[in-house]
Length: 129
Image 1 (cartoon, one colour):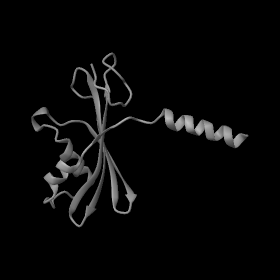
Image 2: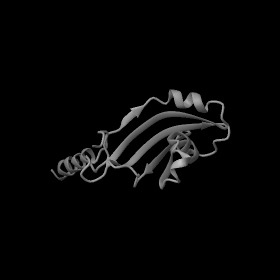
Image 3: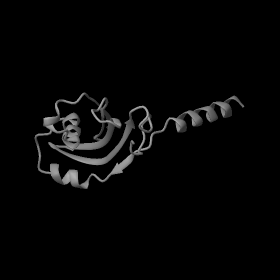
């Protein structure tokens, strides 16, 4: 009985904390980087994908990468405190593989947070108001 109770609590906890993401097709980005051998790290790769305009100043980005095994790396970029009247933060999660000196992106997921009173304040896919 205790096992079933623990299992139910675990399922509720895991499913209630799951985030929704928009899935982006990485084909166009892969085409843009297919000949580049100057991208040394997953951090550089996701910064190139995010392509924050230089004339907007330097954004406060949090970038974390982790090895998934079998040559795959997951890298997450969070841009919080955006200077936008409705959207507070952007999150990009990318799964990529480095072969030799060239990266191939397998998956790109995105979502966002809104400022208080402008929509959802947790990570989600709905547009902010």
